[in-house]
Image 1 (cartoon, rainbow, N blue to C red):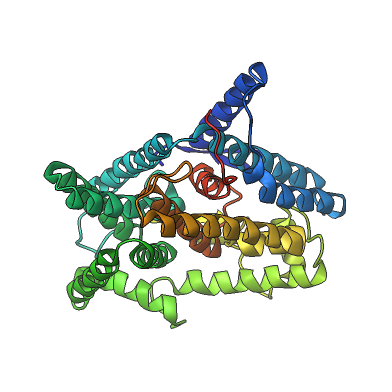
Image 2: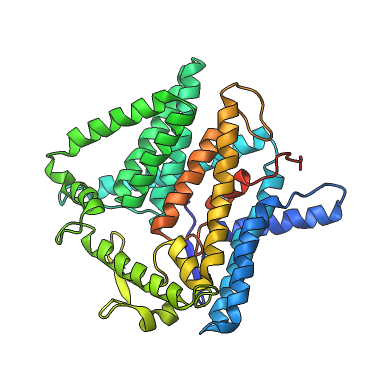
Length: 400
């Protein structure tokens, strides 16, 4: 969450992706040297379907080299972690440690965001702060927020005052940093994730979420410094010119139309992985910009995709690629939903503690919402893929 992004010849990754890939390769090497240990591969099934569809579309791609880079990215950033992560995180303790690592990383990033916001001040309204992870930042804060809320409730139930105060502070930092990102999709993901936690695990989460939303609405209803936040919330439900977020919403609609036209022209194989930009002039509405201002610094960023993983796969690798992603997410949600219901009885689960399953389910829900607004097949996907992989494991986890 705090590592810098790396762009090299059309490949966009960050240092976290590099470390994740290196760790996966090292684990595979250790497995080869000790083949007596079983290695479940079920979590890699659906991303392999996506890779197969992408490979099939490669010969008809407008830019074969870009499609080849896309295949390499999917292999290293999706399939490799999807296979390795469930074998490494094969016990409740290791899954708990993984969730704690997410909390620590998000807490560091969130603290940095708050410090930057304090330095900027609110003279011109509430500042927008993305942080090192840029447009991923808000969604990372949401995942960490669901973990903090879950751990807070568990600490309160166990009457551990110190832990409760610690997780309360973590929740405050993550929520504040989430607000500063001014990412509408992340705000929506936070609401959906909290609703899921409340329905499946603790009703107090749902009640608390409603209470917090009421407080936020009352606080931001008339404050001058919160006008930008109000406009961005309003722009989620209306296309009114002049609102903060209007140009972004209008541009996304144009990109969605472009992606849909690509799909209609190539429904089975698409235009080729990472070929959206190349094919865009052939299918985009007249006057659609090829670059948009993004982030707090309004950096002019060239269009590289339709700003949605669903639309990206639909346009670039066809209907099979989209079905693969939907089945991957659906399988993870189904498995974690079943485990979350079983966790109410507080029985040890297969590779999951009673509190891990609801948190992982909320995390997968965040990934599903994220894929509506941004593209997961670009950079910084290790956490997202890990959550999907943990939800797509076989019923019996094998110790590593």
